[in-house]
Image 1 (cartoon, rainbow, N blue to C red):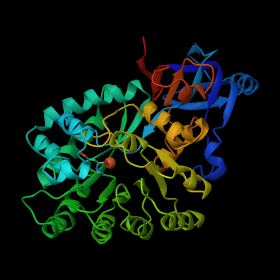
Image 2 (image 1 turned 90 degrees about the horizontal axis):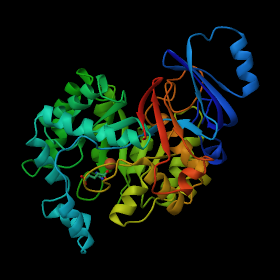
Image 3 (image 1 turned 180 degrees about the vertical axis):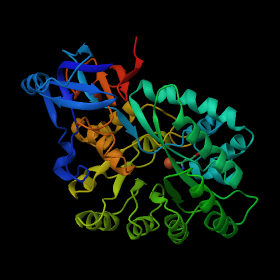
Image 4 (image 1 turned 30 degrees about the vertical axis):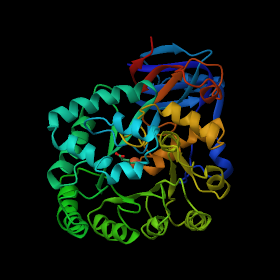
Length: 427
Ligand code: NIG
Ligand code: FE
């Protein structure tokens, strides 16, 4: 059945006809239509526009057999895209969280055998069916706050079999999950090194064994590296990206979270799809990113900012205003993981972006829709409400889009539509 959504008080389209994500002043251009309307046909958007445009569309006569939703007093936005998560893992680390509250740092806990490695242990002990069950349950939490597309990383296996197990869980969930969510997988073998291995041996294994198998089995779209002191260097990332690209994997990078050790340079050299974290990003690296993004012959590198990590670890916030002022497109994501940001709620991240990054509601909305889509190379499929795209949209019961960050800590989301079907309704 087709669907007409009528008289939407505020329709936030985030439309973007161009080849480019929203940067600079355009970061706050959300393509707002007052009293807007949407027609959905076979799971896709056939029309989005004003009431007079709707009349013309309907009188052309091709729209048939449809249900109608009245959306007076409602705000509709594109479905949110969480472009950076680690949602497939087992166990939890609330004891570490409390240790941090009593003064230990994330790095001290990791050195003592906690951190990423404790989750690796839990993942290794859990079979694929178990991991699938926990992860699908988490998707149910993401969807209720508006995430309709999610990126997920491996990186809690740290050997071939366990990395593949995580990636296969994502492949299976992408083929079928209760919410019809789209899942984009990233191979993050270089998240840490297991103590049973030497770093150089492990990097060799990633480059000469894991990448080719993962690519052949179509288990990942992107390849990611954690560039950080005591983890991987920019040279390690360079090597891993060189091999990854040979096998068709697209680079992305965890960089500048605690220390700035040159990750941005490597990301720029490899034309990464995004650089993520950026809590301690320096001015020189901002200039590198700005220069890359100025060159219109190159695909933009999206700055994926993760304010939930700054909040949860009590570390600095990324310089989002500087990024926007330098015309670098900004995306926002949860970084959902058990160690540095334990929330599936992208609306909480949007609130943090408002208070701490000083982004306005419009900039924030583009950051979780069209710019996030660009960072995952899915901008032709989703991320905005435009004819031809998948009908992924959110109906909010609130007077204006600005209310989304203003009325914080509650969920005004009423219904989630994914590929034209209502997949979640708030009672
Ligand atoms: O994105 N920075 C590295 N990796 C994760 C944290 C992983 C963990 O602590 O389990 C992150 O913050
Ligand atoms: Fe992360």
